[in-house]
Image (cartoon, rainbow, N blue to C red; front, side, top):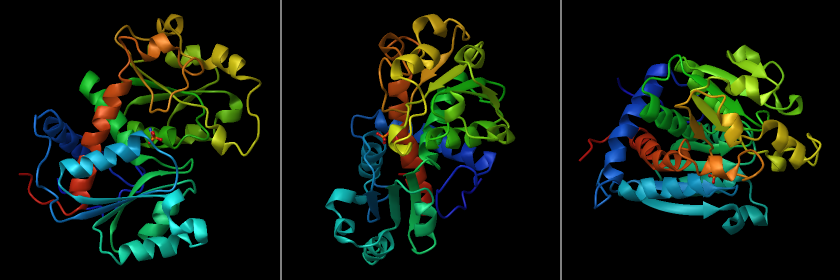
Length: 310
Ligand code: CP
């Protein structure tokens, strides 16, 4: 099928078929990353601006690598190096960047809705690389691609997402993607970190980790997002949180024996995940990062106008 979206702002607005198209394409781009010469001329002559107004290790570097592997010309831009520190608005910044005629603007911003706002004001395609607690669509796509690589189809799989659901754009985008692909999604976390009414999205809510991960095919652990809590304390102590919601080797025995363990990063070892689980045989955490490049190559390719793959 053809991919007709102009931007990638969230998963909510994609159909299951569109998600499938992106995942299939990511699988074919994964092959390029395994070649000795990891470069194709597909996006030669096209310009991508990476505008990261919040810190990032994985997303930013994998977009940059994806752009290089597709031969796009890219410009990397961070908040501290931009004129927003001198009082320029985000919209003025983006309008000035637009005047340099990029095909694609990739944006990460602390404010939910920023990429949607920018998309209404520019001609370029806009890719949301994470906006506040709202959405992180390429993360959800790379997570689905990783699950598919291990489990085949997602339909019917029990996927447990554990941790600070309320502040997690990763959780929100994964809930949309996984339910569209007909996985059975279970959320677990303290009541203070669980969005009210989230069951309406077709998920099951638990307040104990054990019941959520029992028999699970996939366990996705999340970091506590202290930076989005506005100074509020939503749990008694890290030690208590870890004892209640941390994934240990002992607790992992509750899952299906072939279950995989995921984490979008950055991880807080010894808090939400024990080091021996993070580094253990069930962990696919670094494979998620590898898929991050392939998924972002697929997204860039489709939004840049789908020239033929060479
Ligand atoms: N998963 C993720 O978004 O990580 P970064 O913040 O390092 O990009």
